[in-house]
Length: 111
Image (cartoon, rainbow, N blue to C red):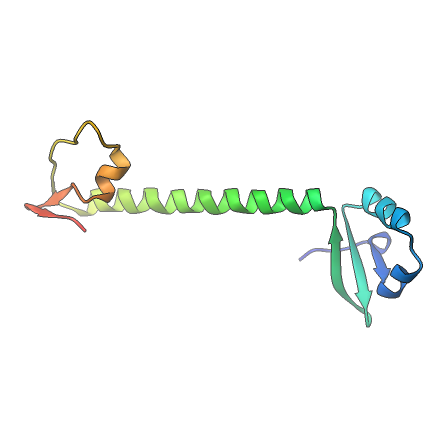
């Protein structure tokens, strides 16, 4: 859970009196600002650069998880099969070769 210090929170009604310059100064002093609506933290403000960096990192982590799942699937496939290997064509990558089912289990193509 994200926590906010007292300096990082504002009542939402204060936006009526804050100038854009003051709001930007607050954001430059604090990584995040929380707006309080009806005594609850309801809105969080971040600089766009911070948000973009977070989104980029999340996408990188999603790609990493996908790569790890693919590696596990390929590893499980190799270990689970009683395989007879056929020669890998030189014009294809190992990953594509595995994905096309070129490992054969007792003469049948593995799916």
